[in-house]
Amino acid sequence: MIGNIVAGFIGSWLGTELLGARGPVVGGFHIIPAIVGAIIALLIFFALARSGAFRRR
Image 1 (cartoon, helix red, strand yellow):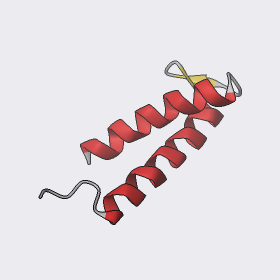
Image 2 (tube, one colour):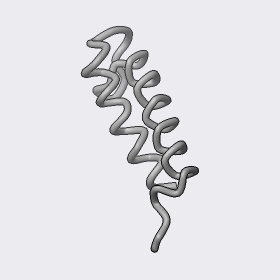
Image 3 (cartoon, one colour):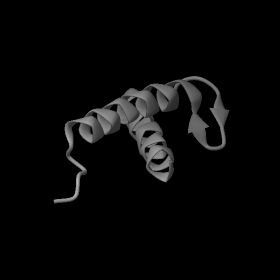
Image 4 (cartoon, helix red, strand yellow):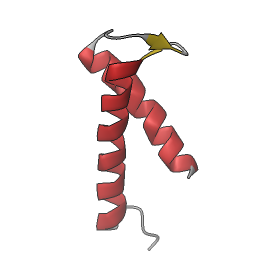
């Protein structure tokens, strides 16, 4: 659960950097790029987790 939150924050920051400052601001984040970036980051996180990239050896 903490990993999802961290991935969401990283994605929202990345989305704002990539898409620029668009839309309303809430809590210092621009909403539209933050949501898009968070969704993309979580999809990447889930794909890596499902492929076994985070398994202990």
